[in-house]
Structures are given as C-alpha cells and as structure tokens.
Length: 558
Image (cartoon, rainbow, N blue to C red):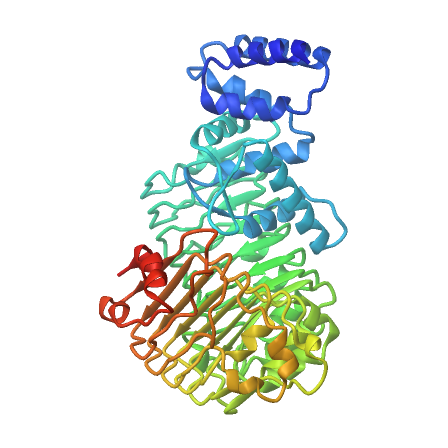
C-alpha cells in the first residue's frame, strides 16, 4: 500500500535517525495493517516527547512508544523486571521465569504451564527487540532499553512499580536503608558489599536481589520488616548461614541460595509455608539440612539440589538430611505432592532405586549428579531412560565405576534419552566408555575429565550383538560442544566420520593417544568450528586426506 509506505517514512523521521528507536518502533508498527492505524500511532509518537520535556534523553519517549504497545500489563511488568539486572548482564531465561512465577506475574495452573507462558513472553519481548539473545539459554537487555525501563519503573509508574536499582555499580557499602522504605523491587546485586549493618523497613518490598556480593553474614532480624517479600536472591555470595528471623518472610515464594558458601539451613525455614521454589544448586559446602525441613515445605514446586554438598557430604551428621547416599532427602520428597521440578545429587544406588520407584519423582527429575558412587563397578544407565525429563547427568569422583551398562535386550526405543542435553564425567578414572550416549538424540554438550581408562567415547564392540542398532544410529546430530581432558588412553571418539551439523567447539587436552577425529570433508560443512588442544597433539593427527586436513587447519586454536 503506497499510503502506508509514505506513513512508514513519516514514522522513521520521528525516530530522528536513532537506530534503536527505528528497530523497536518498526517492530511495534509491523502489525498495523491500515492507514488509519498508522496515522493514529504516528500522532502518538509525535506527542510523546512533548509529554516529557527536559528529560535529557530524547530516545526514552520514543522507546516508551514500543513499551506502551506491548499487548498486556503482565508483559510490561516482565520487561521492567529485567532492569533489576546490571548493564550487559546475561540473564538466565530459566531463572528469570522462576522470579516471574515467584512474583505472581504468570497465571497458568501448574509450573510447566507457567514456564511455557514465561518462554512465550520472552519470545514477544525478543520479537519486539526490547530484549536480545545472550548466551545459551540467556537474554540481555540493551543499555538504553534498560535505562528507559528504570525511568519508567522509578518515575513514570512509580506508584505501581517503584524500583530501587543499584546493580553492578561497584558499591562497597549498602546504600542508606531509609531510601528503601517505599521500594517494591530492590536490586543491589553484583557489587562488592561486605557488610549489611542496618535493619531496613520495607513493608511493600516484593523482590530483593542481594546476590553476587562479598558479605559473609547478614545481621539477625535483617528480614523482620519485609512481610510482603516474595523473591529473595542470595546466590553467588560468601554467606555461610542465614540470619535469625528468616522465618518472618511469611510471603516468600522463591529463595535462591545457589552457588553460595552456605553451610547449613536453619530449622526456622519450616515457617516459610508459602515457599514454592528453593534453589540450592552448587552449594558445595552445604552440610546440614535438618531432618523434616524439606518435607515441611508442603507447597514446594521446585527443589534444585544439583551439586549441593559435593565438597563436604562426608561431614554430614546423622541429623542432617544429607547424611548417607541421598536416600533421606528422597524419602522426604516422596511426601511433597506439589513437586514438579527437582534436581539433586546421589551417592548410592539405593537413592536411585527410590526415585525410579516413584511415578512423581521420575517425572520431576530434571538433573541428576552421581557423586562418589562407589558401591558398584557398574551402573545400569538404561534405567535412567525412565526419567523422561532428565536434561543433565553428571557422574563425578566415582573411582571404582568401570561401566555404564545398557540393556539392549528389549525394544531399543524404550531406552532413548529424549530430553538429555548435557553430560559431564569428572574423576571416573576406571570408566571405559560412554556408549549409551548414542541413545541421546538431543545431546548438546559432553565434558569428560580425568577418565584415564577410557579408550573410546562410543565403543563399536558394545553393538556387536545388536546390528539393528548400528543400522539406525545418527549420534551427536545436535552436539554443540565436546570437551575431553586427561583421557590419556583415549583412541577413538566414534568409529567413522560424522556430520556434526551443529558443532561449535571440540577440545582435547592430554589425550595424546587420540590420533584421528571423526571428521571428513562432509563434517560441519554448514559453519565453522573451533578445535582446541596441544600443538604437538594437533601436529600428529591423522586425516582422511590432505584436503580434509587443510579444510580444518584454520579451526585449530592452541
């Protein structure tokens, strides 16, 4: 329509040549189909700057036009929430959606439905160019969009939102708490704060980000005047214990302690009866979780304990749920009827059998770590195929483990790990191969460290008795990253070249017996890859022919 073309040019002139404004407003106008719609929105655009005289940045009103065109107040709130993170910060999509759920932005009936709604909202914000893709599973907010969002949250919609944001600005002391009193969302994350001395009064506070700071303790009763708080993030901190009075957070729904130095959880956490998400992932020093604490959190939907206690599990006392091989934690989980997502660490086959015997736990398990799994030389890994939602598997420091067994006697399709996308093997010095990975069609990442006895990642010998499996294999079709360190006897990745249509990086260090990679002239043709390793190892690699060697020569980085 030539009329719309002229109107589009008029809209572009209103953007005054500012690229970010052109992009975001272009996206906002893309759904307008009639000249009348265009004329109305151009008039709104023209008057937007005059509504905010003396602002000092003419792009904010232009970007607010795109914000105002978002389809719902929920989506607007979700966008503003992203401004709580520092400039140029890569935000985990999963953790962001967890916070949105904790705040009550998402309204689906169950956790899976809320997560789908969250990813749908992220798609809308990405399409509108108000967010951009970050790393794998992450989003970023452009600095100017973030400034605009803070301007809206702190000024334009202060009564509704009222943000207090000092994220990633190099603070060594916390700001005066008198400035927090009216805040609804408060972010002091990613600073160098070493001390929290004052007791704040924040009756309206809903979200509090204190993560990525240097304080080792929080004063007792610090949280006693935050009755409305729903989301508390203390992750990546040096905090070793929680303060007395944490039980006063009667509205808390989301508590993130992941990657912190926390050593014990207090019994008074039982009072947090509204808690729906507890994140303890990678709390390596965690020793004490009082018995019956977890089972008392009856509304818990999400419990993440992957890597919890992995540095100190043998120090756990008998009155801690972490005592033993993980069976006490599993026993408490069996009574939580609202659980939808779990990840945790096991140290015995007994705990695994308890999970596999529960329909609910089988369907909930997203990530599993076997730590010091030393009660057998083999693990029947085919049983893990019953964990239909298992995305990540780690096996670490299991010194006597030699074999990950696959029972292929029945229908092979029963043993496919459809959801598994990440596998990590650390310090399993006697483990011989990872052949079960051919049954993981969506695998994206493999990391192997310190498997001295491993001679092949995929062993052709294991399929000698099941030729129908050999005929239908298409392994590593979605693999993006392969990293092998210290596999001193490794000779083979796979017995023939593979296409690797999605491969990004391959890394091999201290794998001097590996003489050939599963690459030929048809491998990774659609894109370039990076191959890392020692120069001496690279020099003695064998290739299908000289042309293949020359094709991959630019890929090598030492």
